[in-house]
Every structure is written in C-alpha cells, then in structure tokens.
Amino acid sequence: MHLSDFDFDLPENLIATRPVSPRSAARLLWCEDTNTLDRRVSDLVDILRPGDRLVLNETKVIPARLFGTRHRPGAVGGSGKAAIEVTLLSLTPEAQWTALVRPLRKVSHGEQIEFGHGLKATLVDKFDGQAVLSFNLIGEPFDKALAKVGKMPLPPYIAAKRPADEQDKLDYQTVFARTQGSVAAPTASLHFDKEILSALSQKGVEFTYVTLHVGAGTFLPVKADLIKDHKMHSETGYVSAKAALEINQSLQSGRRVIPVGTTALRLIETAAQTKGVIAPWSGATDIFIYPGYEFKIAGGLMTNFHLPKSTLLMLVSALMGQSRVKEIYNHAIEQNYRFFSYGDSSLLIPSETKKVD
Image (cartoon, rainbow, N blue to C red; front, side, top):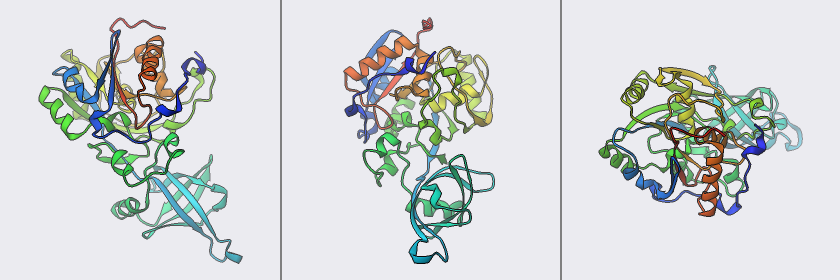
C-alpha cells in the first residue's frame, strides 16, 4: 500500500479559515452503509439513536504560540536582541517545555527569551531541531501569563493564510474542554455547542469523556512511500475507569460507540483489550490505523475532512474502505464541503459487511 493511494486534488477555495456560526450549523455528510446524505450537524438529533454513545475528547488547547525577544547580556552593538517565535509542544516531567523555536540557531544554551507580562524562558537544551525551555513561572501563574501573551497554534494551512487572533481562542476550543495539554484541537468536537449537547442528551444519546493531548505531530507529513514504513508520532492520553465502564456497558448491550474525532478513536482503540472490551488506560500512544486494521471498539466516527496523504485519511479509509472513502471525498468536493480544522463534518458508519479493498 503506497502513499499515492491516499492522494486527491482539493480546490484551494474549500480550505476553511474560519468556522461557521453557530457551531452546529456546519454541514454534515452522513455516510451510513452505502448511503451518502447531505445534512447539518444539528441534524444529529434526528440521525443518532437513543442509546448511542459518543466518545468526546475533553483535552484543552493551550495558546502555545509565543512571540518574544532573545536577550543576550553583554552583547556588543545591540546584537544581543533578536525576534524569536516559539511553539510549545509538551510539558516534561521536570516541568520544562519542549518547543519549536524559530530561528533556533539564534538562541544558545542559557540564553533567555522574554515574552511580556512577566513571562520568560531560558533555553536549556537542543535536540532533533527542537528546544527545551525552562520558564520562570509554573502552574497557575504560568497559565495566566500564557493566556495573555500566547496565540492559538492554528494548523499550518490556516496560519499560512492569516494570523491567529482573539476570536480563535474561542473558535479553536471545544465547549467541554477541561484538561490542558493540547497544541491542536480535536476539531470534530468543535461542531458541538451546549444546545446540541443538551438536545442529544434529551434524545437519549449518551456521552463518555476521555483525554488525548493532541500534539503538533498530527500535522507532520507522511514521507514513507510504503505506508507500513511510516512511524507515527506519540501522544499522551487517559481513559478513566468510569469511561471504560460506560463504553463496555454500551458494547455489551449491543449499542453503538461512536468516537467524535480521530483522537478519541485512536485512544479507545489503544485502550482496547480485545474486540468489544476496553480497559482503563493512561500513557503515550503511537497507534497507526490504516487499511487492514480490525477495529475493536469504534462502531463509527464523526470527523472532519482530512488532508491528502495524511494518516487521518488512512484512518477513515481503514474504517470505511478505500473505495468508499474516495466516493465520499469526491461527493464532498463536488458539493463544496469545507475542509480541514475549521471545515464541515462527516458521520461515518461502516457497513457490517464492509468490503476490504
């Protein structure tokens, strides 16, 4: 199976740079079995069945993009200052941050970067094109300063078109976000607002919350020609005992478990013990789901439309079949669905007798 098997042509004008409002007004391509139907996210109240369980990722995106100034004490002729851009990646056990720093060559070990509002960082290490930064603030003081000076880390295909602004701090965050740690949003969940969550609950749809902190690796391109040779990035997640119990009860009673977003799907498939059984779990996962994978927990998926040649496109192809996904994406392009993080959504429910491509 080759990378070219997951390529397609996407018109530039279909890449969304802002979400629709209200959130649930986004379009929804409902693909169940062989049916392909044009709907709205708000129609989920009519589409989903009482007893269906949606699995939601409650991770919270941090405003991880920072713009600061490097200060080199004692530099001659003003050369001690330089504009530095930092994108935080992950918190280490030592309460330091791995980060992308641009330009990294401008910053040496022990040098300090100032971001404003009292927030400063010292570069303590460099490795594999990344930096390790030690900040002068931790805990709540760090969070408050970061909220003031940080920008939302918009995906590259949006950031190339416009800078992040204050509106993105609302738009690029789910309404149920709780646990800080992501540098990218679980974007399928951005379509939910309090009104549709309430309406679904009244319908009898049930919810389970899990946490997978989405890393910048989600935007890394696949470089291996043979899919099986690709090394997936690692992300940290958590499935509580309560979440595992809820999912197991749904599965045992024959009800559908539908993760919202590829992050929630990857996490519950990681936590699966055997087909139809999930256990409490925490740790780092680098699970790579591509055609040929046998799903153990997920009975469907709600997800946005993904990049050509991406691991996310490979995942939906594993769920629905490659030929079926090509049909779905051709339909989405023909009908001018909006693509990627701020775009429209799809509800994918595979046939129980899905053809293997």
